[in-house]
Length: 285
Image 1 (cartoon, helix red, strand yellow):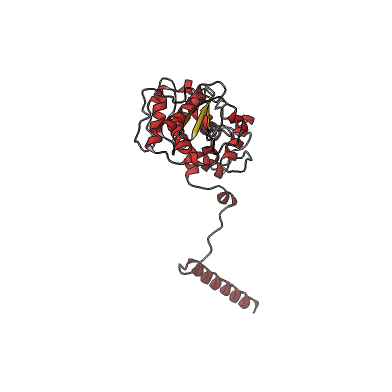
Image 2: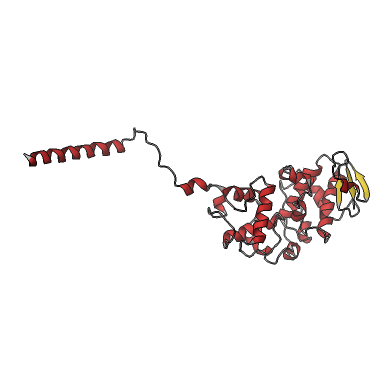
């Protein structure tokens, strides 16, 4: 009797297993998708994975991710040290500076959001360009000897090739055009050239960073950076204005500053020796 009951139970279990397996294989049955692992949910995919790895980059990290991080920050003027693949205190400060300027909590952790912002801001960065930054902060010296290369501007309307002779990369030229457009697109052409000239004058001055990006992204230097207009796509006239400044036209006569008297709130800027007014801007030393 016990054997009979055991066989019946075994049979019931077998039938139940067959029915359950058929239920799982039924394409008409809707089932909730498996939940992604925590890491897969945390680290975004997309453009970031095409360059950086998916892991966050933190203080003390080293290797290829840090190498790329430092070189991208350097292209934007946020990093002035040697690109050595070591995430130390100098890199940490640069990351926090970049994050604060791009609306990210400045925690110094390079996660998916920071990577994406950095990649979008350095769209023309290439791994082959990174060795140019190994010599430290003097990007102009690193780029010498490349004057024969053509620097194509965004939209292709105006060539900015003389920038190569001046030791400027394509990204530097693009950032200058962005700055001119963001700062002075409503100004007369001479005023736009004047803004480009001020940037170049600062690059030459020992009191400012020695690259256009460094000058442009220096904290508090340009309104267009503060309000985000630096990322607007420049028109051909802005690129032409940069071209004229690179060719040597300086309507300001060597000025390092300019301001709009209608909107300026700094008492200090009013104390600078004024040289010339062009459009809405007063240019000064």
